[in-house]
Length: 166
Image (cartoon, rainbow, N blue to C red; front, side):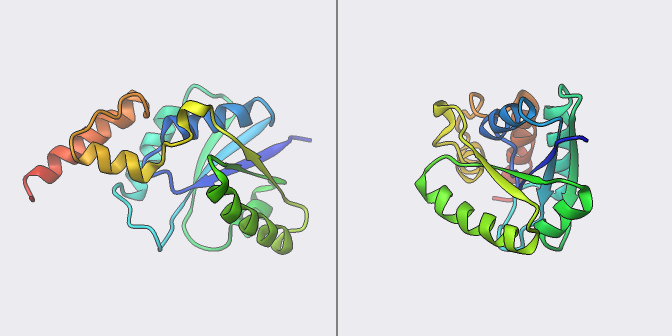
């Protein structure tokens, strides 16, 4: 039996904090699928296709990691259909935990066999959020310590593309 987990998120963009949590999960589970969720409440910088490309590039070093998209529907239903009994969530601070606790209890109600595992990233990433990285990068700040070189390249291209529209 394969011990399979899913690691869902918007990942706009995929940061080194996300990567750190993924590396921890890969050491615990036989298979981890990064599941990029479309969130109608979030205004994303990158399209679904762009985020998928970035994530695939960053996680390509892991033989036991897959990448997928949850276009619509419930995460609990996705986990059930994927055969995953674990949902991995990164928690940086108490504020994250409060929200994630609510979501984990709801997911357990919807899919009683699922367990949510909370993993904390390295302390150097506890203040790194995708929204902050996006904003700093779009304003020309250096985010190279917080994202994979490929993601940095994609952020730079996005910033250059926006310059002409300002």
